[in-house]
Image 1 (cartoon, rainbow, N blue to C red):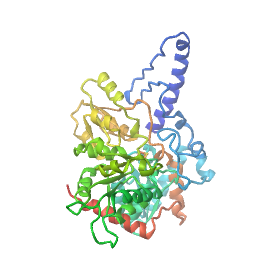
Image 2: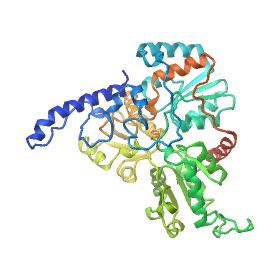
Image 3: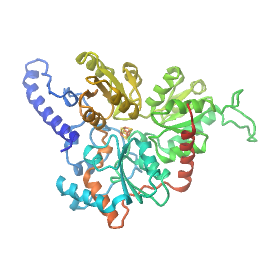
Length: 463
Ligand code: SF4
């Protein structure tokens, strides 16, 4: 059993043990005992308040039968009606043992050789990552696809928007396959292209589109000729939104280069509208000296996003109301507890965490930044990390001389990525051997072309 699967089962057992232990004490009017487990990263100090769902211990077919993103990190986020759905797998796969699946995947991989590359995201579960030819963040994996012209197909063990980016950057005759179509991303789904177009129209009505009625003068531009607003989208967004940015003078960013990209945007525009992660947008803009009062939140179901025209005119960064369900779980309280339990601990978090968490931490940065911090840590250091549990556990395995733990004491993986079970991988690989391309993700010509424009602007942007 993999480490996170073990953690989840231990968490469920701990929940049951705690429920039994605390019930008579509560009845007697005393506080419930706090369960102490020996390993900090997986210590389930259950409070009953956690939203992370022990239903993650259920079998994957039970999880897939329920609508939604799956139990756990993304509980409560509505899945858009047009999100891809995964059909049931043949019984051969759903009834196979772990050992059988392992045998099938290993044999299929050997047979396919370098015709097929398996790409695994950093947040992917261990029992998938062990088969990956490349492991990285979404952009690294998309580039891995570009750099391997010999591969006929990439099996992308990440989520939907990542597979789209890989398809955009790979050549048209290379197939990108997402083993489980239900592996979406709740953050990316928080901004649909219709909502973004509507937002843009409303912004243009308030800020001007940079041209007069004849389409020549700079109505809405400032003295320097800057456009009223530049659209910027985080990599974690649909291809349609990347294409929207490409068409409208905008750009894509990652969590590693968000500041460079905002500087690029401010060289060309008076304001930025930032999709879909409000936290990455806010944390980056704050680090650049922009005040919270200049960052109105755009709520897509309200007129003008719930703002006045004046607030939008005074804005520097208009933040879309999206977030990552995994990273929003981290709190300042968790940091204080880590500091109390481990004096001298260094706290590092991802910039998708809320601003107060980033400000209370000792450092914040992308997955790559976190990995480098761990790599460079002095032996014996204690690090509390605010990011996805699979990555944190893997970092601990790579540096056993350090004490590394996840800030959130409740085990909670990215529940959408978790949808890629080895049975889906076995099914995908055996289908490829049979000459089929199941779950191929394709981005159509115009969307791909405009997305590429926005991605190329990002690659060309220099700090
Ligand atoms: S960790 Fe968050 S942003 Fe990343 S894929 Fe999962 S839900 Fe989406």
